[in-house]
Image 1 (spheres, rainbow, N blue to C red):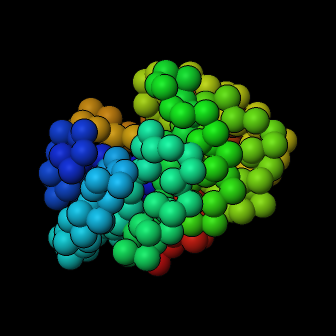
Image 2 (cartoon, rainbow, N blue to C red):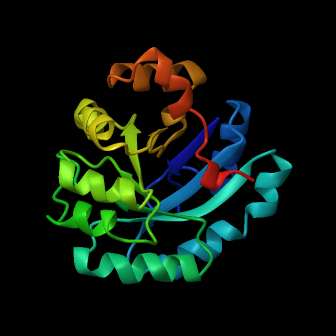
Length: 212
């Protein structure tokens, strides 16, 4: 199993990176991205801190993806910050999408969809056909999220992805131990969002770009 969107005490999560990784391993995960919230103030320190637990992750049988979630930054800054993250060693760059429950700057989804250095748009809210079409062309993933509040628009995201060919992933956006999902919970999140049974296995399979 994979989870491409998790948080630790490096931002607003409750767990040390090692404890998160250990708990994920016990639940059966083999690929985990630690993607703590980042902006201009902490992007470099966050990447370097996560990278330092790579050997610990391997000892737990986890393929660690070092990442960041660019959060509430001005849309015009997204391209340069995403490029900087990649240049400094990030395996995955997430953009905190225009969820309907937070005041994310308008234009964030479009800026993320257009950026070659962005891999995933987290909880993209009421993403448009135009935005998702661009995301599909750039092989940017859209997230079905388990996070309360952010998950209000999961059904919309699935429908837009079906129309545009965007690849979907299921993530926890974990901040605490109780947020870590079982295999069955991941299936229920996908099914509840409107993913048909015939496509669930594809969505719950790690995208090739993040495989070892």
